[in-house]
Length: 232
Image (tube, rainbow, N blue to C red; front, side, top):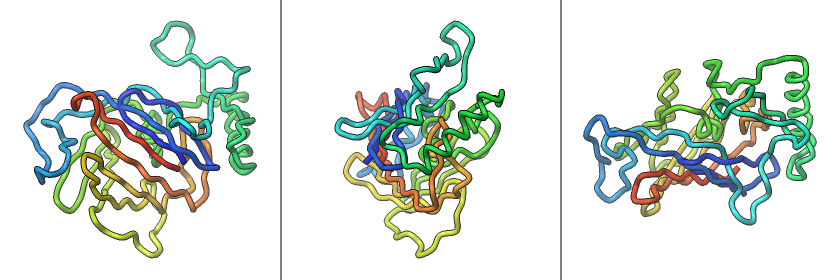
């Protein structure tokens, strides 16, 4: 299954299932803050935000996430040269036919001149776990009953209800229904009920209404980085 983290975001894997990892870098502190309970990790970390630092990468032993088609060069922003759009490798053996068909449709859109910006760049909701990969700053607000994960733009707020069970039939929504709990230094978030209008990654990989994402947030490197491992 897949994992993801925050600091240096890596690649993401898709529909057959997998574990990925990614990272976020911390920024300068602005306001004093602390976790509501001294026995849990303080992801608020003095009011600082966490900046997405890359893409997603597979955890050892997990299938590869969707990658760039090797025949089509990808050039991101700010590296020199003319930037290009993501173009998925539809031959990834981890993909179902459903996912391959959706990615071919996205590739065809690029071929026809569609500007394949990140959904957040268009002020569109990205869904989970794609929100973890979106450029920008993420903030945490921790209370004894809930953790709010707040993305700096577009008023995107995820509500993670602590020590609760999922609803029997949650209404589909952009961020789904998230419940969580702490396991030592790790916040574990379980999300279901996402709308099928969102995508699993930045290549626009589609998903069904059965999408189930488990994220594990943990600070590393002395609290300067936030790692997110996720299973899809």
